[in-house]
Image (cartoon, rainbow, N blue to C red; front, side, top):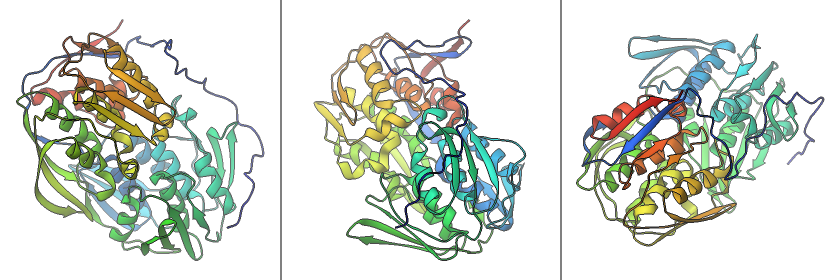
Length: 472
């Protein structure tokens, strides 16, 4: 495999200060909506979760890579997905919402144009990493920026493989945003072996390969979420995957023409995990969640909680835009602690915060190992969850790549929880507050809009007791 030194022609200025993840971190609560979570009675009802975030990002990007009009129903209209919409508009696509659907008028593979302004990805790592890959084999330039949190998340994992095919990336010291990217023309394909198992890195490389001359090969040890591969096939692309001694090898043919499609986005299993967890914990609960994406690379959480003794019935199986879906009926269950199989970590990386909440009420000990990737999410989620759980009276042991939670019959609560502006931390502790002896206060709720606008209202609809107030 060709190796090229990372190009750093100049240093971009440091625009953000590094956050502190120490126990003494100060919460900035000024004018941020706080939530008070009270112990709930039984939760019940039928719920339709918003569209899957990963699929929504990809639907917008792939629609822009077709010549013609793609229509998308069920798109997640979260802050993160809005960042992708605006970014793709800057790159030349026309995107509008008409009634209950979004229409994307694309420009074809290799048709990106240089944006007039910086591409502001906000808090969305998916927007940044996937679009860096998508434009890298087109001879245009772009500067990617993000908010304080995203600007402290590693981008070397994207810069390194793109540099191997000649892309010039200039980053802030440490390979952090802001990043200036200069794409290449007539790109030759590469062969890549993943250093870390990451669906975002895989997707960036495959998107780069779409406009390369030949076949791009990407090998990962564990099969990470495969929405990009499925969507390529759904749009008429050519890609194949095979199991090898080194893991899973993906072969993508370059210079393809994709065909516009009509898409309905299935409901997000990561967002559904919070409602699943709440129903499992609150005695007497019985809820049904509709049209959940049941992609094998996304249901590690369901497999783990089934081992813990969860009472979940899978009904009405079908497919939607190349993705398997089903309805889930979830009832209150007495759970037991387990050791999470390492081969499931990649398929549930976003669900570990809520799994830690479930573990706090399970009988015995729950061990989560090989989860170091949680340290480079919107917050250091190993630390964020451990700190909050300890404050609520739960015994938690943690290190750089593991967390162990000792279950207990009752969790004290009665604390103000620092979310570190991380949506999954906020939603996880909202779930815990359904069963704590004393109410929990959540430091802010604005971060939830990055992935799940309307989350609080939907929780209240099934019987939760949440109230919101603004700190002054």
